[in-house]
Image (cartoon, rainbow, N blue to C red; front, side):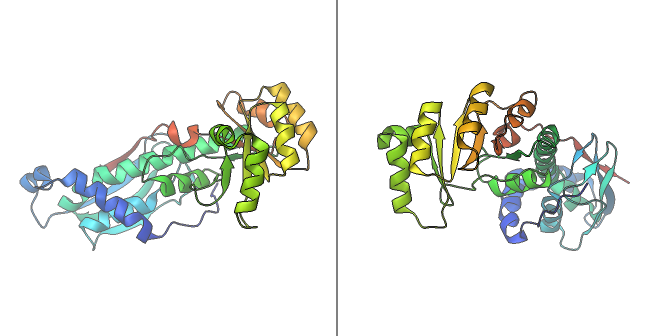
Length: 284
């Protein structure tokens, strides 16, 4: 299965890759490869998945290698969004041996992290299949890696929530406390932002939901609602706003949440708790 996900531009990824390489190479470079391997030696190798998962982050591996050997050959054998098997060869590379071994860990760190996010996202999407609910991520991402992690979420078939603080209004409990209520907060937001900006309000109970609905948000986040209260919220608000369930969602509970009829389920675990997919580089 291949997700229809457009690639991120190299210009966005390259600074992250170069910063990671600089962190790893330090002041003296890869002293092991320099000491052991002839300067002009070449090496062919393959990136292989050790376990089944969903592929994401090929550009990171390509750019890590190209940064140290611009003439390196990089042949992708699968695409981001593909389901891959344990032991499957993902990429064949041929490059200067020192450069390849110096870039290896940076490439694997990015690949393993992003494949892990994509794999977990796919598991959540499959868990709610047929219910109509959409799985989205949150802003609980690794600092500086948000664009990459949200890209990996899309590779897994889930959707992105807002990217940052500047692309949608999300009124949470502390905003409500500071504004004097969810209704006043929504009305102030509506008066302050343009017509293209969506407004979402978080509520923690059915009474607060009624107050929010009167103020007219685009989306209501139902925070840590019981299944019974989720069903009641859907009955009250169906076709009036988009309803998002959030809070302590797990693979074990997500199906039951989806079956209440909510439109969206946001899952912070997609990015803050995804296990790395084990990928290795094997010399040929």
